[in-house]
Image (cartoon, rainbow, N blue to C red; front, side, top):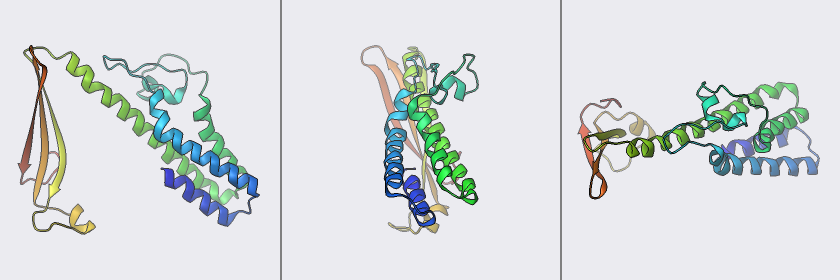
Amino acid sequence: MHGKLFFLLLVLNNVTPWLREEQNELVTTAQNLCCYLRKDYSKKLNVMKDGIAVHNSCISHCLPHAFGNCQEMHYNSCMDCKNLFIFFRNLKDHLPSNLHRNLDEYQKKLIAFMSHHACKVYLNAQLPATLSQLGSDEALIIVDYKMRINPKKARETKDEWFGKREWTLHSVLLYIKNQNTGLDVNAFDHWSGDTKQDA
């Protein structure tokens, strides 16, 4: 994501004659947007301890709205989120119209990046919420696909890596509530000859 904004500016630099001040301002804005999207955006997404998403008046930070079940109004966007759209509007003002489609695609990719972070924050809050509600006679099992293993080589080409047909590794975590220590967590690796992710 960070590289896409700067790649975009480098391409634009070769297409459009920029005034030095405008170019510096756009580069600074791109750097600030990158920092915000990578570090600060997800900090404004709120999930309660019981795993319920919290409404936010900024539509870009409202997880219930992202999941399609927010009944409240969103009257504003925070300045950081507005800056993303202002940045692309400023680029369109300085570029010929034949490049506007590319700018729209870049903007959609950045919005998808924000959506990914929103889902990640929500899902990461679900494990502690579920574990806090775990009863003494219950267990939580999480199975995670790790990778396909090709045992023939220590190093593989990209084609070999993505074309593996040998083994599959899944990790299994078993959470059990223990009266004395809180939670017992057991980890298991499951090796399978079936190379499908859902094997």
